[in-house]
Image (tube, rainbow, N blue to C red; front, top):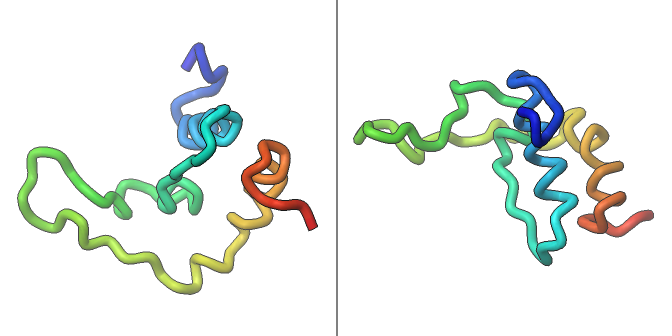
Length: 83
């Protein structure tokens, strides 16, 4: 929390921004985090053997507000070409 300067509720956003700002050539982000989904969208639950890796994104979610929300950061950190 102290390192990112944010509270627990905004932790995914802080981690996403940190990854985007990284000097790494490639940044891989969980779609669930970009979409702001909760634990119902978990891909894997450690220590369990059922229902892992079965989450599927709703096609309508791919065209929501998340693109407008993250576009400025994607451009700012050179992760998306500007128009």
